[in-house]
Figure 1 (cartoon, rainbow, N blue to C red):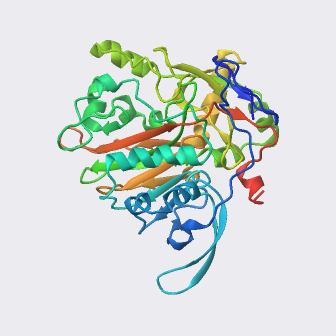
Figure 2 (cartoon, rainbow, N blue to C red):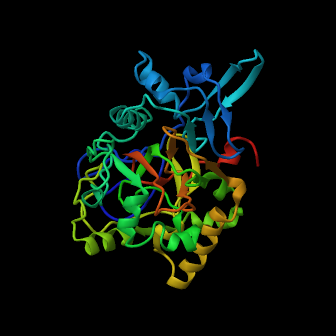
Length: 392
């Protein structure tokens, strides 16, 4: 396991085991990739694009959650195996189950009307637990939870601090203007991974869309694995020596302008406390489930590369950001319908909502639950996705 400490420093992992001196718990796992039991082989699926995305057109999470094999199903959604699958017409396909969430980055499920709020929370919590996250990590509480109570998790307007309601109405309020604000004029500003300002950021997230506009409001995801693979080897080596400071000044500004306090924590892990919303992470991290390297610290969620001057940092961050938003062939796009669900791995993907509909007349609302994982680390012995799959 990799070394950890309760400070702002990012971790570069060694192959030895190390426990936090602060509380004796292991917070970063440097381990072999997990192996699938094949329990998902019975469910038809297809890959949305070659590098990212998978859809299960018939799978119902509510059925999995009530199955006696629930834990095995959930665990296999995060790991690797081989599958021989028969489609509806009786043809056999030999498929590699690139682990459904952590290898494919994001998984899409349609029409999940039976998935309750409690099931949604339990599912994403179990996905983290069963794929090996630290025992001290749990579900995130959004730092702006006190400012997000205008819209509840259901028609009764009930509230749940472990559910972050994604709402065009709330976005308008928190941004202090029209829905999208500057993001409407410069859409690249929307790309991010969830909660990187936390010392223990997110591993997995699940979003169920409750209300969709008549057109638009899609979400895009991009592969951090593929972005890393598009960088030359010498430049990869350079980036692997760097860490970056992550922050979210927008959240701080919203709380100050609207007059509510940022949730002081803990927010899903004992390390996630305080109101500064600043943390340091490696530019390149290893996903402990797949053992693959991913580009992690890019775009507007990064304040500065710690080891470089501001000018050097700005130039490098600009280049890394362009790898994400200029390359549509490492992205996948989700057109939402009512009760559709997306599950993604925040350690190796970026995502952004598309603010292309009239927020004054239409509404986009969903329930998101976010699991917190391990302290980000880089295992120098880990491989890139293409290297691991023999695609170099």
